[in-house]
Amino acid sequence: MTERYAPFADAASTELPLGRLLRLSLFQLSVGITTALLVGTLNRVMIVELGVPAWWVALSVALPLVFAPLRALIGYRSDTHPSPLGLKRMPYMWVGTLLMFGGLSIMPFALLLLSAPDTAGVWAGRIGGALAFLLVGAGMQITQTAGMALASDLAPEAKRPRVVALLYSMLLLGLILGSGLLGLLLIDFSPTRLVQVVQGAAVMVAVLNVISLWKQEPRQARRGKREEQGFSRSWQKLMAIPKIRRFLWTVGLGTAAFSMQDIVLEPFGGEVLGLNVSLTSTLTAMSAGGALLAFVLSARFMSKGLDTIRLAAIGALLGLPAFACVIFSAPLESAMLFQFGAALIGFSGGLFSVSMLLTAMELPERELTGLVLGAWGAVQATAAGLSMAFGGVLRDVVSGLATSGWLGSALNSPVTGYSFVFHLEIYMLFVVLIALGPLVRRSAATKHTSHPIGLAELPG
Image (tube, rainbow, N blue to C red; front, side):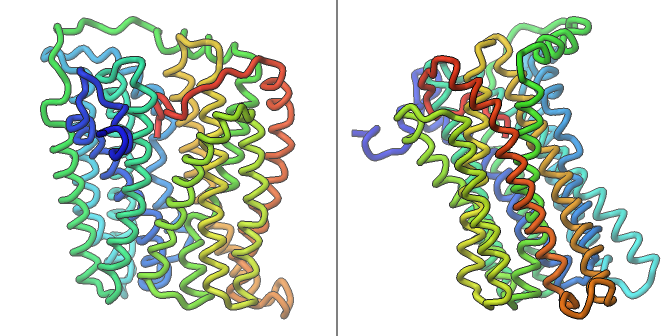
């Protein structure tokens, strides 16, 4: 009866009961709420309400991903942490929580300085804002990497796919709930309300993570020193896998194609279509809802034997009409078409991401599964951060050329910079489809083994 009415009840086990598992998953909820705040709300507030240049906003929001390339190393170090207390995951998760709380606590004050009339105040705000985003980013990467590893430690091997599926769903739920709450709280925007909302998010993150981590990791025997050069030897073995480099490059390129609009999508809705902060904040919820729907549908497709690379290609193909809807929403002045395009971007991007993850899980080198998925997460997060930063800079450059008359009178419009970014993402998706070709042939040549849609050891 419990398994019938409670989603993911089959993920529970004697070692990890459902109540303890749900409590552990709260750290993913806090990461999702923080991501919604950074990507879905603050970028629009800084660009439209505070008048901050989009290039600086893009670089700041991308700063949390500076630590993304280190995720594989963070996971390896937590595996081998020489703890005198016999704890290997908990110290990393506590440090990550403190970094997230500290960054969110100072962030609103730094952002308000960005709109100061004097140059000194603006530069103080930029330095403080960069520090805040950097602290939050480091905390998110450390907490999520160590938390997923802790869940993998606690769950039996047979239940691990469903456990991590629950954690991934909790991340998307955090994105949806965070976007909805932020949109509701910022209906009547003011600087004071911004401070209250961001610092309230800091307290919520700390409370959720404390509840999540409390007495979760059992103490073990004191751990000794790490093996010297163990990570480098494992990495060399990973790079020896056939076509692993093409696979990682395709993951990065596809992620960049779907992520370049993350910074400029909400400002586009506010500046071009006249949507308020509340409505643009809900775009993140719609995008996350689309990704969650893609997660559910991919389970059905995989159960019918559909090749993972072909499923990723379907996601890339659906991205083409998604960006077209966003582009045409400006001349048609259709907020509904814009919102539909945003949801379809989330769905197609989620389908691509989940499919490429499942491809990584099907690699035959099972002893390198953790490192493969860590590399997948590092490449994906790094590509997302760089593409978001590039998208913001590109929007500013093209908009400056258009409004100054360099591109002709027909393109002298604030829409031009945004439209250029969306068009570039369409072209990149065509390149992704070309890159997927050899991987489809490799996947089709091997016998397809049905893998549960649990997304075991998902790196984020």
